[in-house]
Length: 193
Image (cartoon, rainbow, N blue to C red; front, side):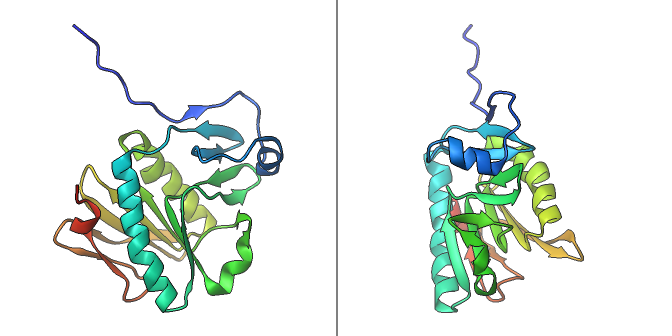
């Protein structure tokens, strides 16, 4: 009997406690996913092709909507969102409101207004619990959790410093934003294979 091969997970680098400034100064630029979690370097394999298709579809819906309404800027991974000297993430898609574009300084020096994460089997806990708590604590105003396995889109909105569930949508529904009033995404289109 051949043992099932487990999927790669984010790997913690050497036991050094990094700051983002050290990481930026000492490591070469890379497109490999690298996040800083309490000073520990977390390296992940590149996302799957399907994950990147979903990222692209969400970005393709959000970017023109934000551009037409002249609301700010939208980018996709990899881009560092530095939340503290020892914490940085690389959200799949993020939006920064035009009145807060001063946080764009090569990297994002502070929380984006809207963050979307496409959940992978190996990132489920980090996206649903760890990053949710981190983004809530640092003031990401709206957090989209796009789950290909469950085929759901959940939108959390920051209200009085706590996330509230705006909604959970499935194929056939349109997920909507509270932050960007009028912006919707057809859920089924995100998950087309």
